[in-house]
Length: 437
Image (cartoon, rainbow, N blue to C red; front, top):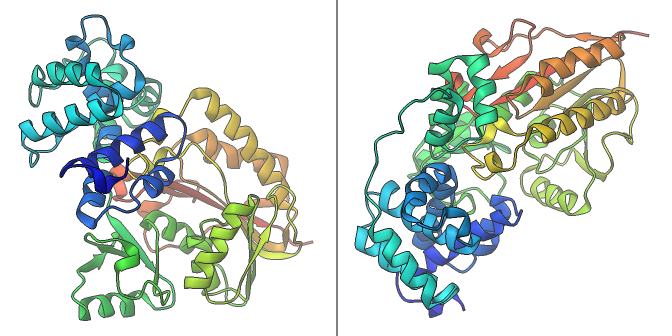
């Protein structure tokens, strides 16, 4: 049934429901949104996005509210109906601007259309028995479970963060992960100053991101902003812009961006380099990368379908490996990711990262450097990974740099961005120089 055939109030909610179902079945949130939001007007698009992302961010809390109302047990409720109930519960407890009667009636009608009359009656009874905002659960003997339930994060991951950051800072991290992230733009074919001035001239509010790493823009789709088609900017968090700044590409350098899609850092590197060879192993992602570079690149970027572990170039001045990782630094931007991470995945990714590092090392010329980056907060993917690489490759060593912001650097000199401290996504980068021949 198309969104146009639905009564007022249902198109956005049906789209959010379809996003939740797709995420439940393994589709990344951004891809699910791209499909489900097609054809909606701007107001419904914004509401659907907020409903889907908010429900994912609050899933544990929503389940904790709903479970006591299901007498036969929450596990007896089929996944599609669970998602509908979570969607209704989020509107009742997380969105003050949605009247309770609208939250209940739209969820009931959606259950009727998507599942059946029995599901509609069940949803009606359950949601009408759901109270408003509940007090936080009492802290029990398991702090990780307590905080995981309260902020909808896996307890095993919260336990790691408690050991590393302590109680107060971990809670700030969890709370930040549940905030709606800002839209941040990076200059591409303009300078930061020029981009901000042109936005102001056209009535677009744009303020500096933390550490002057981009512009924060309130509302709107990027494609609707002035200068999108002309390539004035790319969408990218401040953390990733700081990784590109940390790379320190010299003018006229030959750069290999080993895992370049979607291309934000490639654009930044291309502003200084002579040539950026932008690699991507998956053809569909390479096609998206090429499209982004045509819109906003300098013309010095060249896309190649290649495996980072078997680089198609030798003698590069700078190699950037933005490695696949657990992504624990981007939970605010990708709320679905927190439900997919496991200790087993962390171990598997750490092994994959080590193999990729060993592969791309061969592409660095003597005297050049390798920049290893992740969007993870986990030591196994960051400093531990780098230390292991250096022990295997004594021809490399850490290369100091000065970002003008010493608070962003670890004691070892690596870039270490933490959401709760720096107001950006989480990210890590190490700059590793290869000794002269």
